[in-house]
Image (cartoon, rainbow, N blue to C red; front, side, top):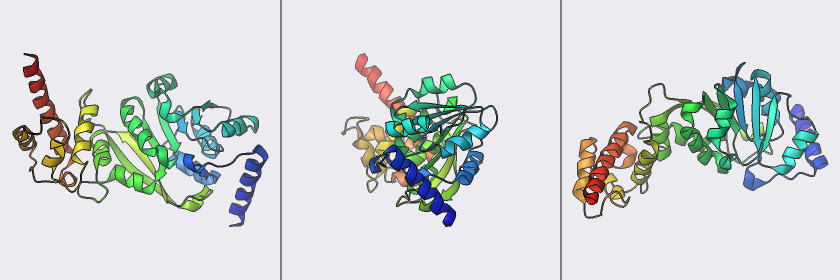
Length: 297
């Protein structure tokens, strides 16, 4: 407890010296324990030769741990005050490049390509940015080794949930079809300064060894899956009827697509396995393509 008090006091002194105020809307809860940061870098699998892209530099505690293990670190921080403090206080290792940018607005394809062949992403994500950045990572999955993210425990559960679980939804389906994900460690609010009101999970995600999606299929599958889960109390037939895939009167087309995927029209999406939802998306894509071809003729 005394050690933690000293850390808190040193952080407060740094923030006060720099005139920095933490912003709740950015979810600024800093990792402060260097030993824990070293442990997380190990859990993320960072090793010699890696180029790590870190999102959320904070005060550089995790950045320094990553720099000990990786060949290079590119760390992204949105807060201009923190960027200035990191540079002027010399808080980053020599093999780290600091980018002042919004990670959600970066060209990730260009960033990953520039980083080289062995890229890992590690992030202590603000809770508001977690879901959109995880979606970006799914898009980049074939270009990176893996990604390890500190996120709200409830968001992590939405990523790893299985069919029938309370947290099973569209995000779990997208992860199941594209990646393997595992919670590596749970962290209490006391691991951060200031302490958030929620618990956190350190989630590591790998691209699937045996891809289930075909090239260019992700956007369409995502549209179908999101429509299927859009109204959880309704049957999957009724949620799809409101999804704009066919005219509302063309119920038979939806029933045929569901039948070809082995799904009962009276089922609810949370009872349908990811592979069957993928089969459904493909069946709907085929029907849609036929209708578009008939319209052109």
